[in-house]
Amino acid sequence: MGGCIMTAPRILYCHCAHAQVVPKEVKTAVLQKLCDSQVSFEAVGDLCEMSARRDPALKELVDAPAIKIAACYPRAVKWLFAAAGAPLPKETTEVINMRVQSADDATGRLLAAEISANLPQGKETVSAT
Amino acid sequence: MAIKDHATLKVVVDEGVTAQPLDPAERFALINALLDKGYAVSRATNGTAPGAGPGVLFLGRFSEARTGGHDISNFDVNRICEAVEQARSSAQGLKHGEWKPWFPVIDYDRCTNCMQCLSFCLFGVYGVDEQQRIQVQNNDNCKTNCPACSRVCPEAAIMFPKYKAGPINGDVVSDADLQREKMKVDISALLGGDVYSMLRERSERAKSRFSKERDSDKALKERQKCLVKLAQVGDIPPEVLMSLPSPDEIQRRAEEAKAKAQAALASQTV
Image 1 (cartoon, each protein chain N blue to C red):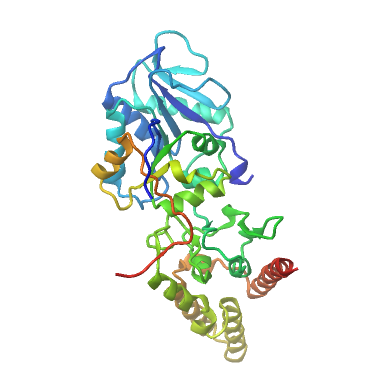
Image 2: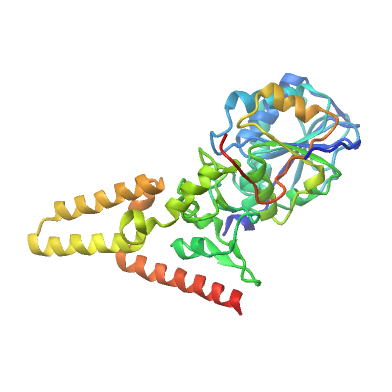
């Protein structure tokens, strides 16, 4: 599923401001590390709200050569963008799930040079182990 | 005005060519405060600042005047947030936080266009596009914290990203989830009649009992019992159930939704 590209990916961080589903300590630490870094980044108050509004800013974001998104589940992020009329490119999008990943893991992936594309490719169902 | 019709204000923390960089602690405090209020914020370093335009507010320690810029040399987070709020108000931009973004998101990789969600929803959230494909049309009609339509989807294709648990929150769908969803899809089997029919019947029974026994408490208890059962099965917040329209209105809306779904299904087979 993963892939490697050389272009510096754009970084998008979702603060999930209107709900408490992303652990506060994780999102705070991720944002803190982004602010401590030298990188440019986009931060949004709430990706769901932007999707509901079909915010044109989402279209601008998907036009980037590659994008890393720190938010929630990749399946949800994929279809939030699609619902806004801004489908994410499968090959050049990596979603970092702050609901389940640690702050260190999430930041490591966000700031890594390479991208590991991980959008769901289609109808996926996993068997119980 | 529907939420999608509002303009938005974009805030850019400019640390580019014409602005001094902020201290990391100040940068974090500012961006975090703006995000808490729901704003979208770009941090722009060398050469990455977007151009000025309507709906864009630049914040920075500017060495020279900047169009659309607000100088934050005397750093005070609260005052900066007030200035941003003023700019939003002047631009008649969306006031964030007035609506919790709670609405269904369809996973079209899984959706089979069966229209169960369209026939189920009483609040006109769903509709179909020109190709008769199911879509979310009125997301701000959705009842906050109610995931009921996702429960009737046989393919676990309806997500509420702010829901607490998978697969409704967007987590990967497992075989076990699908089995569970298949059990839930026929809510009628669980409740002895479809949800709305059951509500109507219970209400009618309660009404009849009321007229016979003149016992309003008993009728109310009956309705409450019904609502509690529904809330348990569908994880539907009691306040949503309590705000349902009258039984007659429920019937009217359910029939309307069903007719829309049947029309969409019929045109699929043509």
